[in-house]
Length: 248
Image (cartoon, rainbow, N blue to C red; front, top):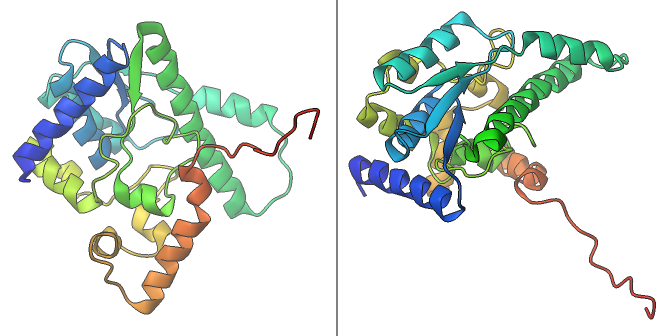
């Protein structure tokens, strides 16, 4: 399947999933990153009159905002902006601040940002009877590089079967602004954060392993360990299934 066919199939898939479920349109979080930009364009193709992107800065970089707006402007995608900085601060003040490892605290706060964005998207979706569409790709989902009930808290994941490299190819075909395609991949969780620095390997290495199974013994062990450790994030909550009837 070439990239043009892939774009068309994904557009039709989004439209079918939404219409079949009885919804009227879609809402997408636009971070200024590669995945969300590609997703927003596909969603606009599927629902040109009933979709919008939401910018949700929370101590985010000005560059990310500019990139999100550049995509929105180029493809005439309507947007709404909801600044979450104050909400984030208020919630942190209300929460107990026990003495923990600074790295652990930083991750907890980063996950909080992601979950606030999920709440915001569903607020709009519930009001309009829209679906929340997520930008997670196969590479991220496979190793659990997402926030449970945060950026994974969505209704559908159109890019969920595409490796990061495939998303990049799709971005080039769709005409996503080049500065977005070229910039280091980051979830924007904190200043200077990049995905590959956190993962400890490149997306190119991860994609190669996922697609071909090829990797050094050390890298393969690391990736498989991450896949196993994050299995709970990809599954629905387990339900106790023992027989609890009165006669048991």
